[in-house]
Image 1 (tube, rainbow, N blue to C red):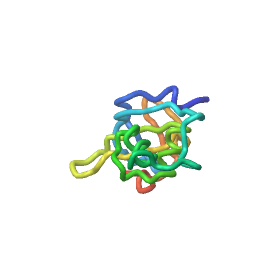
Image 2 (tube, rainbow, N blue to C red; image 1 turned 90 degrees about the vertical axis):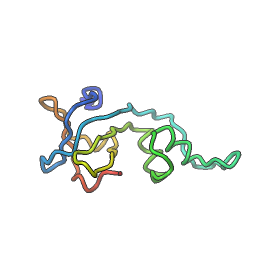
Image 3 (tube, one colour; image 1 turned 180 degrees about the vertical axis):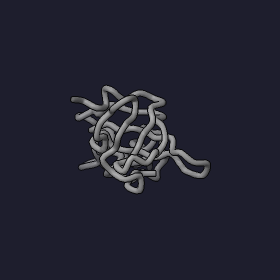
Length: 114
């Protein structure tokens, strides 16, 4: 079963311990043909990681390997619960299941990329 096809904006997200992380703010199905930086050189002063991070809407703080991997396999962007929490991301392979309108992750919230 493809769990990403069941994910919708606004769904609650919980980590593997059942602790609420937040709600789905955005999602993207994976693109196995997505570019990587392997053998790529920066053009015009822009780095590929910057372009990938921009495509994710995250700025340049997303680690290059993670950004490239997320574009290939898909990801969810989570609007984190709490006043001082920032949004975070989980790659599609971090989804355990979607059940009762709730997205269950197979990792702890501390393992999410902020």
